[in-house]
Amino acid sequence: MEEKNPNFTERIRLLEDSVACARTDRVMTAPFYTYLPILLYKETTIADAITDWRNAIPSYLRYHRELMPDLAYGPEALFPGGAVKALDCRFVRIPGVDFPEKNIGFQVLDQEDGYMSPDEYLEYAEDPSGFLMKKILPRQFRKLAGLESLDFSQAIWQGMFYTTLGALDPRVKTAFDAILECAGVMGEQVSAGAEFAMQMAKEGIPSGVDLVTSAPFDIFNDTLRGFMNVTMDLYECPDEVLTAVNAATKIQVRYLKNQIKARPIRIIGFMLHNGFDMFMSKEQFETFYWPGLKACIDLCVENNVIPWIYVEDSYMKKLDIIERDIPAHKVIMTFTGTNDLKKVKERLGGNICLKGGLIENVIEFGTKEEVRKMVKNAIDIYAPGGGLILDCDVALDHAPMENLLTLFDTARNYMKY
Image 1 (cartoon, rainbow, N blue to C red):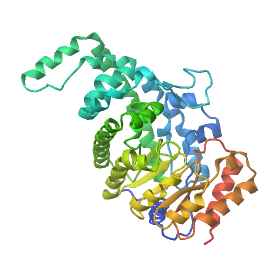
Image 2: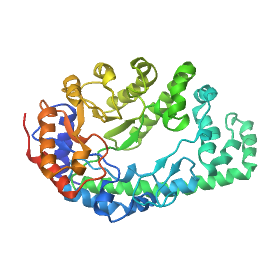
Image 3: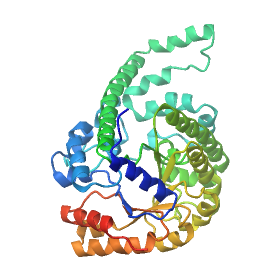
Image 4: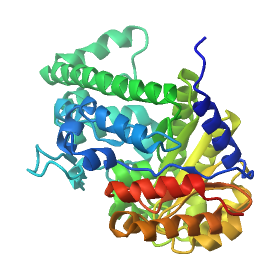
């Protein structure tokens, strides 16, 4: 059996101690990003990296070897351009293809005619897989239009033979050809990401996240119904929304369970988009959003997987729910858009590991001295008692090398309880 790099073992111990909110000799430093290595070294473009993740791997390796963060992030956050093309995706625009700029990120569009209608919540809840295959995929991917001709709901005994008649629609062959093309592209992309993670582990840096997903409620905001539509639905058809979210929760929990069984997973990231204070009242949050997310968190904890809860915008009105329900010493949380992290530390410190403390604008635009002062201040405020991993208030994608070097050097060499 291959011997683990001692730095890998040390970082895993530091991660476990940080999550357990135990005192540590130093603070873990692992800024989350999407495009930072690409923009930092200019060895490729975002457009080329989205086309093929392998174009970005040299820059990702260089970043980790030169700066030695405590957790590794690979290209998985990049939208796979080859897959977008293979399925003729209607809701994503990518650089270098849909607009000329090659070093800006992908764009996700609101596509009203690609969404489910409010009277389809119960149809989704009755048969999520069938609904997605026959309704949503044909609406959102042009080359999958033929899937609406297939119906396997009566594929039992002789019924199975008649079910195949739907495949006489020539669009069905187009759909399955596109699926095979997409699978080939994704196979290459996933292999590139896995090889990067394995190489980082050999060099002593564990993965910062092994699987990224969302809260069950957010699939309706992000993909199936749209942000503005769901906002109105919470008032106009709340019972139907809740029924659908409960069905989505069962699907999400089953998916996570299968992923955990299928491969080694240490950290699962939950990117929360629409549970924040300006969108949901505390009562709505407890009814529609929190139960599904809590079920996913509980599943992770039961299987010795660390949930990393990444909240976008302010959740200050929900702190008492988080404080009440999240199991102590098992979870990492990042609060973006929250301007009172001191209060978060006072309420959650000692029970929940906080991943944050740094301000992206200071790293991007500040002087080295301002960066040094910010890192020390973050450690002074959030490190006492343990339970801190240094990260930014938003994804760090633009930063000069001198400020990055200052950030990591200060974090490694400054500790003050």
